[in-house]
Length: 198
Image (tube, rainbow, N blue to C red; front, side):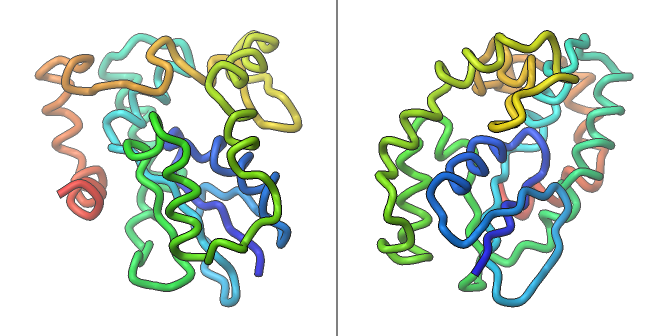
């Protein structure tokens, strides 16, 4: 079986894709649009939409304002956000990894994959691969690229890929009350929060 690594943008998908392509022998496709195929694993990452949107704005080196919130909300919903509502975690071949659970503990990724796929799914030393994919190592790759419009062809790490928050944005501390109210008015975001965060 192959793996479709499907995720909305800015949810840790590049990390998980790099991990899977180095460890899974059956082949891995990275998608920001969900394409359901029989006989295929779906490994998806999800992140609180507000934090994903903040991350999307920061990678473009823009201020957080009404214009950037609107642009990056539309982008997030279009590039995987709305499709994530079709994920059914009850299916044997679907694995959903919450960003908040693995951002500080990459071993969580291995734990969840082992639970669903069985512990013999890879012959590679998984801990070594996770160490190679540390934030520090990815920031070294990032530093070789000027902005998000250039990237490393092997890892797909872009310039500005990892923000000053090092993946730990907290929308409650970053957004103003008006900005939060704007996001709360977005029906698609509300559905995602209800599905994964309520």
